[in-house]
Length: 121
Image 1 (cartoon, helix red, strand yellow):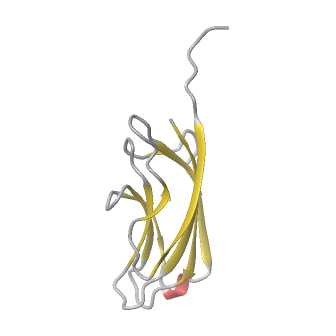
Image 2 (cartoon, rainbow, N blue to C red; image 1 turned 90 degrees about the vertical axis):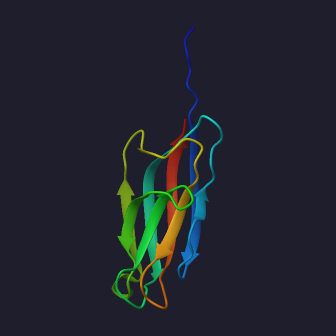
Image 3 (tube, one colour; image 1 turned 180 degrees about the vertical axis):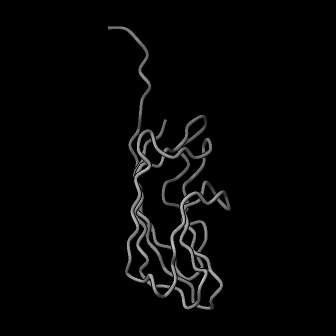
């Protein structure tokens, strides 16, 4: 049998961002010419922020575009948000890490944990 085979690498990652932490790497950059396709996301708000405006967001690289955000205020503490982007998934920029950022306008910002699965091509 002959033909072209495009290898797909399945990846997953998990990390926690606390009290305004930015750019916590969930999945490292895959290397030159490759990109991460995010397929499933689970973000748990472990501790809600003290004021309104709190968000837990997934970013396309350090300080990059936020493509999935959830409320992370005091009223959302202990909630888990899940989303499936389907196949092949949400494409990140080439050779770019997937990051979790927590931000808001309160003095005590939220703590959130992200668990993500995807593929690299």
